[in-house]
Length: 210
Image (tube, rainbow, N blue to C red; front, top):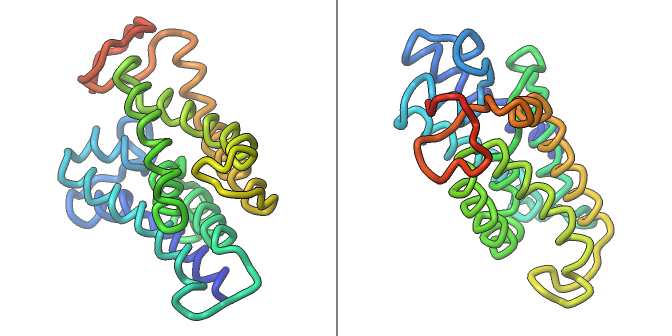
């Protein structure tokens, strides 16, 4: 039952609904066509983008703490977060066509492993500054999460011990993020990826900042 609730939480299409009910715009008809935070910022502006990011992040956090709130034991909270990711990526309320799960994934780690999230956020910010690309920063942070989940427990750093279910779900979540950015990676290779107006653009993408 709680796994279904976690999926339904993740399925809330925040940016899509904000665009439709407050701005009269369908995000799927603008920008990248994605309903996530980045396209919401680009199409609807910083206020709508910020609200979308916060809500999408809290979807992951709330799903993760559900078993703690209701005393569910025997199942890692990360599994509930994973179902929120499935909901965000394949939302029942939006025709099973969802976002790229970056904000919701951050929310899961906020509820379960905040120091690990801070570490990944530092990586994300550094790559974003060097590249001016949210997509590359997201993929790099996801790849770092996979590598770190496999290595850090051996040194008791940020992740104190090996929990293979935890590691497996981290790999699944990060893998979803990477796969969902495949079109972005093609554009990066072709040097026409969308940029943010901040950072060094070291890969010399040609597309104008949006």
